[in-house]
Structures are given as structure tokens and as C-alpha cells.
Length: 268
Image (cartoon, rainbow, N blue to C red; front, side, top):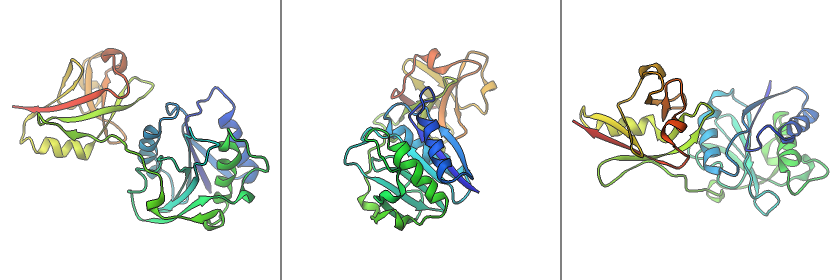
């Protein structure tokens, strides 16, 4: 089985995603194409990096993950293919793979340059269709990465600074909202390990989560732990702290937006 995942900021209103799938199936009619999401906020490399890091492990070995959030399309930015832990990642070399490269030992990285694996005509504005899709399909058919272009070292990849939670001067853990889902849940960059380390250092003190003027006491085990239309803090399915409202939208309830700071404190 040849599994190809797609992660883009294209949305589903236009033809972009459908055309990528058409090209993939033209090269490999047996490919199984899975959409991770096409609703990354336009050009948001950090959000895409967090999503692929949180998602790839749920797919079988030998899956090919195509990530196209590409504000530099048509420029001199490179396209890279990276293989590690039995998975292959195909992405623009613009920092999207920043969080992936530290996940494990890398088997190979190449700069994708061999136009034999592209469509015959390449648009300067739609590499997703003309380069990423056919190259992914060829990889799914067993084409070795070395045939796609020049090997490069990990140190030569473009990396970006992705905001991480930190402990501030008042001994508070400070994170940020990095994504808001369709339910209005506000997903932060504070992962469960970071949160556990902060809480354990507090020696049984009570946790308080604050966004703006709103404060939430403790962590909930599920959404129904709070009364309907009441806010709560919970570790979501991806392992990150999120702020939710039972049967409602935390985004609307809190007036929250992506990038807003989240402050965690401990008290007796």
C-alpha cells in the first residue's frame, strides 16, 4: 500500500488540492491519499511545523508526507525530501521541517532537483501540483531519494525559530495559542511533558491557567468536567494544553486569538 498524506494551507474552496490528487493518481493509480489538513493559516510555517510533528507518527511506515505551505513558491528556495524512522517528508526548505529534524536519526536528505520526476510544464506559482505531487507519487512507487537530487546535510536545512514555552520572572510558565480548531478550542505550544515538569516542581500547589483577564483553576480530564458554556483547561489529543469551553467556543468566550499569551501559575 502506498500512502501519501497532504498538509497544506490551500483550503478546499479552490481546485488546488484536487489537482494535486489527480497528478498523484496519474503517476501511481494505487496510491492511498490522506488529507491531514488543508486549513493551515495562510503562510503559517510554525503552525504547519507543529501539525506535521504531531501527526506523522499515526501513519504506517513508508508513508510519504507532503507539506506545502510555501510563501516562497517560484523563488530560489529549495525543495527537500527527508527520510527518517521509515517515513519520508517532502517539503519546501523554508523551516517547515524544523521540529521533524530533531525527532530521530535521519537516514537521508536530498535537494529535489531532477526534473525527470516533475510534470513537463512547471508553473512558477503551483509547485504543489507540478513538483510535489508527481515527486511524492514516484517516491511512493519506490524511487530512491538519491535519484531525486543532491544529498545535503542536516545542518544545511533552513530552520526557523518556533516559539517555545518558558518560565518567566514571576515563576510562571508562559506559552502561547498556536492554533484554534473549528470548535473554538485554543491549542497552545505547552506540551504535556513541559506542563508536568512545571507542576511537579510546585510540590502539590494548585495550577491556574490565565488568558487575558480570564482564569481557569486546574486541569480537566474531559470536556464535561466543566459546566456547559464554562471554560476549562485540558491536555488535548495531540498532547498539548488547550483551552476549551464545554459545548461552546473558547475563542468566542475568551475573545482569544492565535498568538495570545497563556500564563500558568502555581499557588497554595
